[in-house]
Amino acid sequence: MAIIEVKGVRKGFDGLHVLKGIDFSIEKGEVVCLIGPSGSGKSTMLRCINLLEDIDAGKIVVLGQDISEIRDINAYRSKVGMVFQQFNLFNNMNVLDNCTLAQKRVLKRSEEDAKKIAMEHLLKVGMVDFANAYPSTLSGGQKQRVAIARALCMDPEILLFDEPTSALDPEMVGEVLNVIRQLADEDMTMLIVTHEMAFARDVADKVVFMDGGIVLEEGRPDDIFNHPKNERTRQFLARII
Image (cartoon, rainbow, N blue to C red):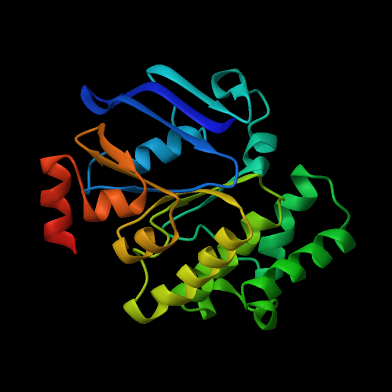
């Protein structure tokens, strides 16, 4: 059964149609990469799933629930974690506090439990030694690994990644992609907007190619990258690979 179902989703801003009837689904444990040129609507699609934007038409069903009916957005976002391009860490808090705040507020965990869980996930992403550091002292790659740990602290069933490496220096991209690879090996359900084609080919179970607000093609990485059916997909991949 699909854990995310996107059906006929439309979204516009000030008369500009960004999503023009998007359909796709994600199974439990599946890693799906959304690829396509800038401005094709990929990040907007992610923001709609995370309830950061309301859709104009269509339906998004996540974990069996139509998300337009969700009232407790914080509880929903604890199950559907999001990792942003620009990290979105709280600069006035150290790494550990960044990872415990939502646990205590949303999940009502005790300080002790929240810290224990935070340290476990910081260890997992290789950032446990920086628990007392502040974000301003960290590299981009380190900040993004903390952001992933923070999302994991909420025990999410799904993780959304919005171009998680696009704000990073090239040498830091690998350390973040390795963490995401590790999560894929653990069967975490993930929807990843990415420009890293080698990563998408390597890690994704399914690749969805978007352009101009529509899904032009979707399939297994081998089919999309080696035997694209759509001429626009071929042009895009020829330019970017």
